[in-house]
Amino acid sequence: MKCTRCKKEAEVELKSHNAAFCRDCFLHFFENQVAKAIKTHKMFSKTDRVLIAVSGGKDSLTLWNVLLDLGYEADGLFINLGIDGFSEVAKGKVEKFAQSRGAKLITVNLADDGISIPEVKNKIRRPVCSLCGQVKRYYFNMIGLKNGYNVLATGHNLDDEVSRLFSNVLHWNMEYLEDQSPVLPDEEGLLKKVKPLYRVTEFDTSVYAFFKGLDFVDIECPFSKGATFTVYKKHLNQIEFFSPGTKIDFYQGFLKKLQPIMADDKNDSKNRCKICGYPTFSDICSVCRLKGYR
Ligand code: SF4
Ligand code: ZN
Image 1 (cartoon, rainbow, N blue to C red):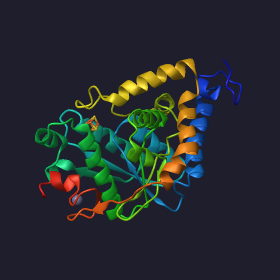
Image 2 (image 1 turned 180 degrees about the horizontal axis):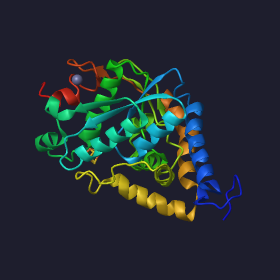
Image 3 (image 1 turned 120 degrees about the horizontal axis):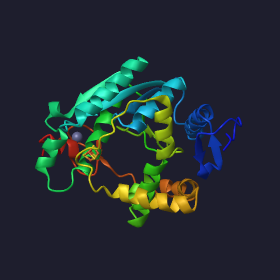
């Protein structure tokens, strides 16, 4: 198999793009996909201060690496969830990366606010993941605003977005569909949010991280077992296998045809939390509730 771009021996085949690449051309392709996402959706420019939500996993470290290579001012924010045997390993990987690239890293310890994820898990009866997601989003936003960043970037890739879209359509979660986009503009109390990896797949990201020798956390969070998104991803990959290009078509089709209508119709009647000012549907946001405010 020859590289589609330079005709040298190819190392990676990308059926959905009808292409194969050698190592250098794959890295060029990957960076181009990210650059294209940033440009098409006007995510940010070289004068913006970008804060990246880094977990220590391959996606967020890949995103950080690419943005630094593309010349953006991009700092990292790591939230230590306080999960035994997991959070410290992740923290070590993020610190090592930041040091190797001479990049700025901000770290927050949830335990300092009495809401480490194991503590939260003990207080509730439902699965902890949805609250964990809310807590992380809250801190990313608050820390970003407090420190003068213009944009918050996350490492969601095409597989994440497609499985989320699939789930939202299966359950007709209209309010989630309204908010599903590679870019969410800023609003009062909320930073602009972007997903520069939305055009590349989980496979592409793994190949990029491998070629670049990124050292990321490869153990799973002990609370992640049985996550429905993993099941959706597996089924979507089967469809992709028989019909390459389906995932990107499904997502791009949504962005072109349905998302603009949904965004126009958006009913944005959120209150602000009485304690911290964060947008919420009730008087007090879920994080302030967890902290003990009633
Ligand atoms: Fe949080 Fe659940 Fe992810 Fe673990 S698997 S980090 S608990 S969202
Ligand atoms: Zn609050």
